[in-house]
Length: 255
Ligand code: PGA
Figure (cartoon, helix red, strand yellow):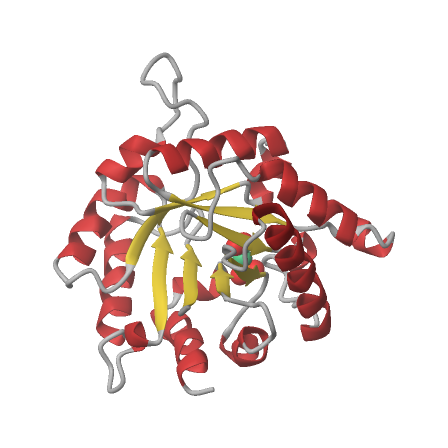
C-alpha cells in the first residue's frame, strides 16, 4: 500500500493563505516524477477553509484528498451548538477526519469513549477516521508507553473499523510541535505493538495504515518513513510550507 502523507494544518492560515498553500502543494505533486504516484496525500485545513480548498482540489483532478481535524460524535442533526457532523464534512468533499488528536484529548477532555464515538460517526458518514494515540513524556519516563498506547488503541477503535476506513496515527505527545522526534528504534517498537494489536483484533493480516506523527520534517522523514510498520506521517508544522510537505513525499519516492 502507498504511504500516506497527511498535513494537519491545525488552527493556522487565513482563507487566502490556505488556498495558496493547497495550490502550491498541488503544483508540486506534478513534478518530474509525480509524487502522487508513490504516496497518497491528504490535507486537514481548519473547518472554515474546507469549501474553498475542496474547490481547489476538485479543479486539479483530485490529486490529494481533503480531511477535517475533528467531527461531532453526534450523528443526527439537532441541538449541538458549535458541532459539525461527519455527514456535513462528507458533503464538503472530505474523505478523512482526524479524531482523538492529543490536543483534543488533553485540551478538550476527549476520552477514549468520545474518540470511539467520533470514529464510528465518521465511518457511518463514509469517512476514513484517523485515530490518534500516543503517550506523554511522563508516561514514557515511567515506562508506561506500551500500556497507555494499547489501552487508547483498543478503547478508541469502533466495531466498524477496518483496514480501509481507519488509519492509526501514533503521536508521542512529547514529540508534537517540540522539535523532539522519537528515535527510529522506539518508533519501530511502538508501531510493531500497534500492528500486533490490530491484527489480533481483526484476525486478519489486513490492518489499518499506521502513521507516525511528531516533529516529522524533511530532515528526518526518510529514516522515519523507512522504519518497519510506518505507513506514512501525520505532519503539523512542516505541512504549513508546501516545499517542506512535498520534500517529505520526495523522501519516500527517492528512498
Ligand atoms: P508536528 O505536529 O509535526 O508539528 O509535531 C504533528 C501533529 O500534531 O499532528
